[in-house]
Length: 377
Image 1 (tube, rainbow, N blue to C red):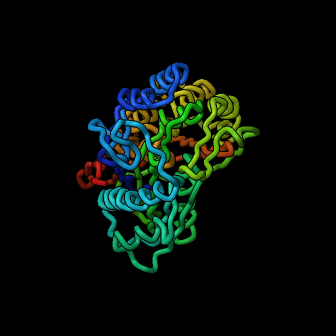
Image 2 (image 1 turned 120 degrees about the horizontal axis):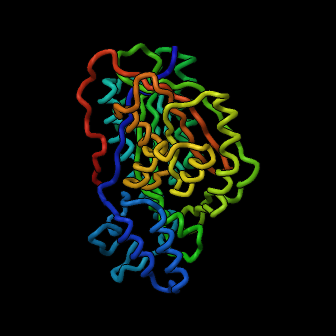
Image 3 (image 1 turned 180 degrees about the vertical axis):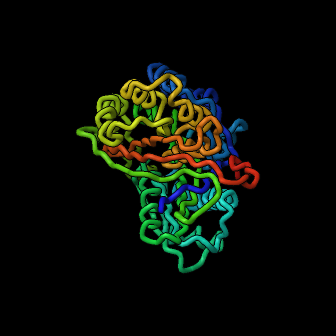
């Protein structure tokens, strides 16, 4: 039987940062010269992001003194241990909220979950996010738990692939996949173009999917085939390492160009002549979406769902593509039986792909819940 995404729940922190305000905040940091200010303004203005969410309250409209910002509005430089402590404080609750929304919309009781797969590259601890979900949701203590760490923005699809494999091996399995990323915990003042680009796009959020092959009359997204492709270059252009002052992101200007060169071959091999009806492409940034669009010869509106999530939420790393798939699941313009090609990019450079099929409900589903609720930190 075919495994299906029954529902996707999402949650974001309550603090909203507008792109204009955070741009001016970074440009006004002490020691920033005029050339760097111009680079900051150009990067933020070209991002096509309107707003983002963060677990750092002092970055919001009211500002204020906190762990990351001092009373003079200068960025502090907390060490990695302090940043990771904030991850431990915020990530489990955000994960719980997204998972609760997904379970409620799928009509699945916590006691029915057989497997938990958690995904994150922005923090680490043990017992980890998988353990906390079992405890916080009241799942069975015998639930199988798996954690995928440091796969980056592409990690949602390996998480779904693992869920699909579990369902193939155990047809009665009900798998909870949760991607939670708190990228903003690793911001820092910098004159590095890589760091400036990272500061202009990354954000915080969580998304959870319920996956099962059990028969259902509800709507969903059938999981088809998956593929992984390593590009011939780019190993040093997208990287994620742990430093003394947080996790250090390398995201060079070569990344969009490499994707533009490699995407056509990778996708053509994967699709093998099939023409999907819709596209769910991870919006690593506006330039990446532009390169995918041009490299695949797509229509100007083909990536509208990806651009809309980027504009309202920024790049939440692994969680982002699930936000896009959630919108497509509830978008009536994506018809029953429509094929959806999913693309995501991670360190390596790695291209993760999946082919999904949308299924309409056989009966009227329960009322949709508002799953874009911001949760308290």
